[in-house]
Amino acid sequence: MNLAYLLQRAAKTWGTRPALSVGREVRLTYAQMGARVPRLAAGLIAAGGLQRGDRVALVLKNSPEYWELMFALWHAGLAAVPVNAKLHAREVAWIVENSGAKLVVASAALADDLAALLGGLPAPPRLIVAESTDFTRLYDAAPLPMAGDIDENALAWLFYTSGTTGRPKGAMLTHRNLWAATLNYFADVDRVGPQDCIIHCAPISHGSGLYGLPHVARGANQVIPYSGGFDPAETLDLIAHWPGCSFFFAPTMVHRLVHAPQIATADTSNLKTIVYGGGPMYVADLLDAMRVLGPKLAQIYGQGEAPMTITGMDKGMHVDDGHPRYRERIGSAGVARTDVEVRVVDAADNPLPPGEIGEIVCRGPVVMAGYWNNPEATAQALLGGWLHTGDVGSFDEDGWLTLKDRSKDMIISGGSNIYPREIEEVLLQHPDIAEVSVVGKPHPDWGEEVVAFVVGRDGAAVTAATLDALCLDHIARFKRPKQYRFLPALPKNNYGKVLKTDLRRLLQEEP
Image: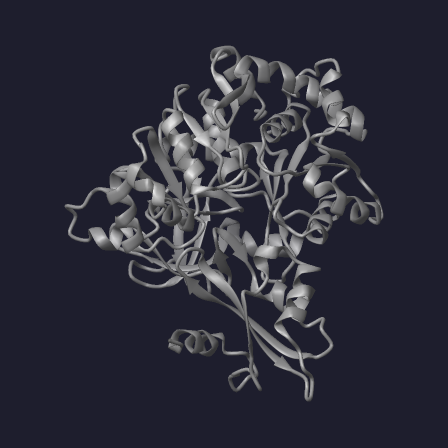
């Protein structure tokens, strides 16, 4: 069944309820949104010369138009390629080319840098600026009937998630995957009604967008902050205004909200739920957040390949402090979600008993169809019909999963995944750099920050400013190292492998 049915149903059932809002202002009701989306769908097809199954890249900051575009694409039988608006234009261009998108819709602030790069692609897509008259004219088309016969296994969302090679991979999320994730939200995370809202402080291109779907399914309001992102003072103001507020937050965002100066006098009675995930939440921080905000936190563990849906811990589990292992439980990743099987396996994929540490694998209707145009990575990730997460953990006797380590050497800063090899490859482009190793260093606000250990070639003098400029020319600003440490050599084992554990130890030993 086409995901666009969610909006069609909401427009009929809750037509007068707010659908899209900015700040404190309602922009569209569900009836209005339901009438505009079929026209936008027809306009997009005409503008891009599109056919069913084609991909359209959305390079947008959070905005009401984001949601209209997503549902218009599904309405027309097209696939959305939401791209993180914080990425460097070169990274965006690579995703556009890899996905084969024929049309790109971008925010005005991002369009200028993107236009020249897209024009240089072998098959340049058409670029439309979201704030332009070209975009508003798309709504002038005659309404398009919904592609109601869409196959449940048809591609709906091409979710690009970084890999250890430094190149992102497109996880193919089907209509079936996203239906399953939406229904699972109601089963395991939270109840939603038309009186509620979700405030999108985190990017719609990722977790916040995935959790917008259950809110559309129940006619709840989608609120975009005026800033388009996360500002603690603005967030607290919106909580005071809108009833039944839910959020998806990275743990660092929870930390910043709880420690905002305005929290002492803020009215948080409208706060309903904060779903947190995407990085480690330390027990001390979690207890502090519950003390300040009350029993309003729920945890999820998932990946783009199984969209936000592997294990979880609902609000009730967070406050079950009478259990003898309460602290261990709230420091865990919770239990397997309702329609997801989760195992911990050894190197031969044999299930391990409770207490044994191994790789976390899962299967269920939420698991992706595979990686876009990457059969080798697909075969490896879905070996034996199970998604191999690359994360390491263990179950206890009661089925609570504890993560022991993150996939490979990934760094999580401010809720964003940063893969060291991508940065290392950029730095090694400098002719005076002999070796580089990038690791994460704990940071009180962002979770981790990026540190690059650099070995220069004999006699070369390389400055941090030079390396910063190199990074900013190739990768997103948030990925660049915050510190550069220059060493005569990198620590290695007998096989020549760099010992990142030794580098992390150097950081830990510093005052």
